[in-house]
Image (cartoon, rainbow, N blue to C red; front, side, top):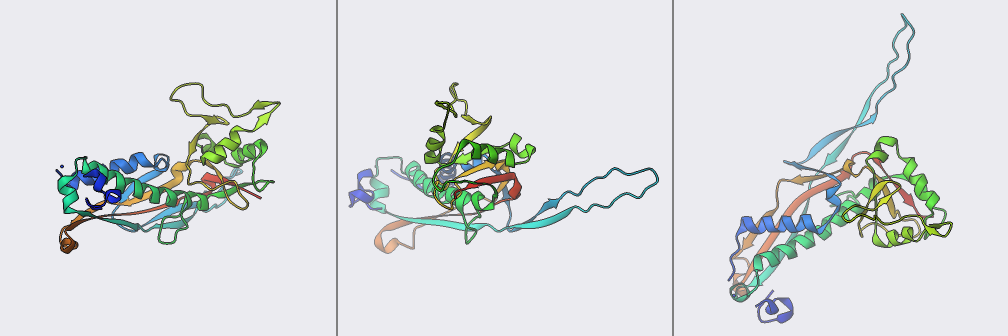
Length: 284
């Protein structure tokens, strides 16, 4: 970013001071506002890599006759490893632009960093493949329904997905799909009437089969072999943060060119801790 080139900063060009702590706070605030998935997930801060025991089977209790031996039933566990992955960004800014900018450069930079990290993280939390990034909720979820059509879902399939979950997960369930899929579901009719009606109360969420809907445009499309619709208890998706965001001002590295570098780094992982808590529709 330089003052002499309008398209990469010149249009912003007086006063600026990089307060490191305040800029970190502004970036995090922007990230919180810029993506919606983590509002439903479970967020924890960790000191490093952790292993989390996850229950596979509860074991069954049985009716037992008088003076008869009790039946053994084991509870089994597996283990999930959370290893924070690193995400970074560096931006160079000319000293002229820092000195002459007449906008609130701290807020501008925080917004720019925050939105770029939010975009990166949101996609990973929804669709990440676990390779140098979190494993997204889509891949972690279990199969609920296979749609008959490669490009559209039916109302019956939505109901089948809903009831494919155990009742405790349904009771806390949230639908997750993108805007295009939402429009497709809105178009479903029965007896000439739209089945899914929007909420009539200001500020109240739309409900589908009595449960709220989260629109996230990083969800997959309604296309052959993809998983466009998820439903379940999204709190079973854990996001583990490695402490706070690290922010550095690099005065010397780019000094020859008269620039200042800004480097930001965060470490985070994410996984669905129970596949039966969230299920998906996969297209034919």
